[in-house]
Image 1 (tube, rainbow, N blue to C red):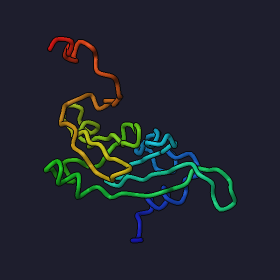
Image 2 (image 1 turned 60 degrees about the horizontal axis):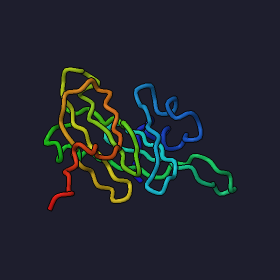
Image 3 (image 1 turned 120 degrees about the vertical axis):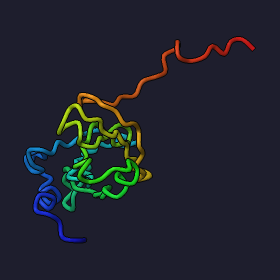
Image 4 (image 1 turned 90 degrees about the vertical axis):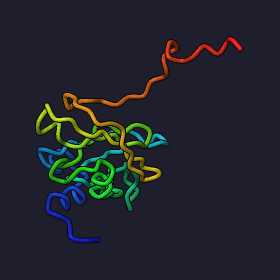
Length: 157
């Protein structure tokens, strides 16, 4: 593995302590679940996603352990046709059923700027563009059933 910046190295090696303090004041990890229901913690530092899962260590003690990291800078810049300077970094919004929902950081620097909302699938490791919008920066994804008024009435032939 390549040399990691000090803040990233601290995040990877210090996962058994309170994560926000380890990751820094401006990194807010998201907690959610994988497709099979396992607790997952994800943090974005720059354009790199870090993943922790709860599992037994070598001594059989169940604890939160670093699992993997994914560098997404190139993929984000290609998908959004933007630049590193424009997007600054990623911010994790939620993890639902193994999908990490995140946004680029423009809205957190200047709430009048639109930003990209993206998803990253833990299973396929695929980044998807969702939408580009101007929001208050505190959008929270959720899953809900289609309202019956939006679903066509299939009773007639």
